[in-house]
Structures are given as C-alpha cells and as structure tokens.
Length: 107
Length: 120
Image (cartoon, rainbow over all chains, first blue to last red; front, side):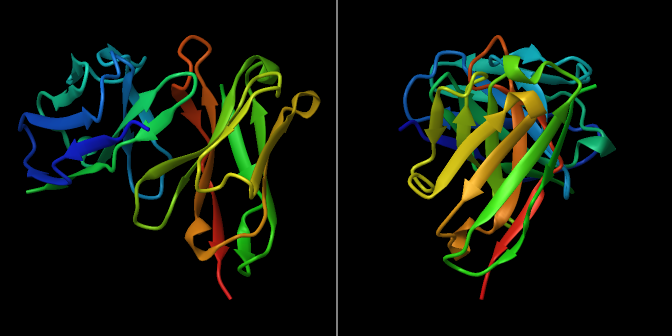
C-alpha cells in the first residue's frame, strides 16, 4: 500500500507569510493528489485536486505543485482564515490514502 | 446544493453494533460513488469504505474488513454503514462523502459527521 507522509506536522506562521507544506508518497502516484483544509469541529474542504487544479471558489493564494512522489501546497500570503489543518490525499479508483496532517498555527 | 446528512452515531459497548445512515440531496445520488471517512478524536483522516454508484463494487480498509458493511439505497438517496464487533479504536467522527464523477477516489463533498463512541 502507498503511504503518504506530510511535513511538517505543525507549522507556526504569521499573517502575510508564505507557507509551504510537503507531502511525500512512498511510491510514484503520478499527479493523483488532493489537498484538503479542515477547521476544528468542521468537515474537511477540498482545495486542490490533480496536484495543481484549484477547486471552484478556493482563493488563488492557494497553489499546488509536484509529481511522482513529492508534492507541495503553498499559501502565498497567509490570511487569518487559513489557520487550520491541511491534509494531502492520494486517490485513484482503488485507493484513498490521507497524509497525517499539518496544523498551521498562529505564530 | 449538495447536502449530506449523517445520522445514527452514539455510544455503544465494545462488541456491539451500530448502523450509520447518510441522507443525500441536491444531486442524482445513483450516479455517484460514495465513501465513508472517519476521524478519531484529535487524529487525522482515515478512509473506511467505498461503494460504486450502482452498489456493485465495494472496498474496505483493512482495519474494518469483515466487521463493517457498506450499502446504499438509491431509491431513497441514502448511504449506510453497518458496523459490527465494534472496538474502542473505532471511536471517531464518521463522515459520509461524495466522490468525483471524473476522478475516481477524489472526495469532493463531505457531510458534517456523526460521532461514534465505543466504550463500556
């Protein structure tokens, strides 16, 4: 089974900072990677799919990149609403595997 | 607007059973594959089970295989998860989710979740 590993587990940042979260797959997953944002007590929300495609309604400060085994989620200028936990997910017709999450905290 | 509303969670003793339901609206339910994802308190997301739009194909995480059964009633726009032989480690919020028509396995919509607590 493919394993997904995110780093860091926790990230402290200030409003306006550029933030990057990394997700590594244990083997190549082509571009089948999504990113979700989750706030406390709420369901996750899809941000990005197929590595770099922005879901409708998601602010353009969010972007994704990578291929194969290494992927990144970048927030170009962190906003107060962005403090949350972020999860990557490998997906295909047979597999759905999440990373362990990265919590973005206020510095 | 897509809506997914879970119900059926609660407190159950180890070894007990529980049936979760998910009422779907705002889309043609039978066209979409559905999935259950859970989240233990303070932990990350764990995919649990998948069912195809017609209900013929089902997948399970190894952690629940043989104990949980996913099903759907397309005439009723409903998704179900029958959970038997429950263990303490099954304690979690269980989310019902809709998958993409275009990309297999991509979760695009989530319910608000229902809490299952397994404890004596």
